Image: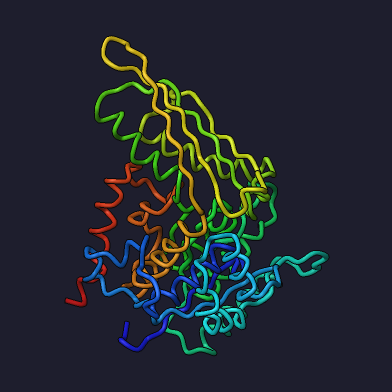
Length: 371
């Protein structure tokens, strides 16, 4: 990776809240307007990894929405996601990224076949890479959650993933949607020799669970039940009002408890769409556990946060780490990036502390050729 190389970050769902916050945030950090809060790759343990600098990232993407990024940033400012004045300060960067966003698909009434759709999406990726002379392009899915895949047809997330494979682009699935995990993509994925990571970014409730569950296990406290509720608005709230989409989301949330505590813990996760909350969400957990001599105790937690602001720095981290893995010739699932996901590829540990240790070691390996 040469010092003047530029890395493309192609966002699926490029006009959504997470994508807009990532593009605006990257511009703000590189301009010195805000510190890189929440970006793990900007902390000291990652200094030797020689990741692509934030200044080298070039953004584009696909979306079926047509609201320009500057307007979307204004809406996020009104919602309290972006600080006042930031959207105006980075308008040029938002406009440049918006000019590189292409219509996604399938669109309403779209008559193209799957192969025609994949070919069109792949052509956009190639035009982006070649037209801007980018060394590589990382495709990151940050679109709204789609219902769990059924039938033989490829869902939209898998069409975008197939386009990434066809154009030799490493792929990150920050959503619980199917993406590369559709069985029809398995042969192409295996033959691609590409690194990939996913799925479903770990930003709030599951992040907390991956810290607390090991505490109970390591202190030999028996967890009897762990139930949770999520209240959220915005695009995610609307998408997850669909029971099939919510089921896809909850599967990843529940995996961390199964992996750490086993399958016998009672309780479920519920998701409610509350439009009045806008871009904000509240997650509540109720944990019933036994102590010495069977004494019954309870832990309750409340997490209130802005999902876009929590997710955007992780998207930037993942784009940089995956780009460097590609530059190093790594292939297959990047299990060491499990730190970022609810439902990671492979069989990595579920404890956040163990995942962080592996992530730091991975970053050190990425930088070995630079020292």
